[in-house]
Length: 86
Figure (spheres, rainbow, N blue to C red):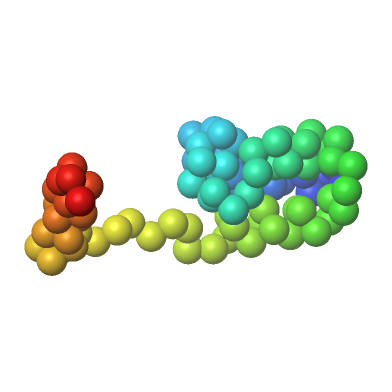
């Protein structure tokens, strides 16, 4: 298990600047859980959490939002309308 944890940590650090940055990019994973699993101190089902972390690492990652004129106009209208009195 220890070798698997070290390999996972190395894989994360190869793609991200830090474990923290990995957690920030994958909001479905809790930071404390990821750190506990990688430290070998997770009290729950560590194998399940390892699988979730590996799936997040191997997945496509978060997709950037494509900004279009229509989406920009919609957001600006929402902001403008929040400032008006009903």
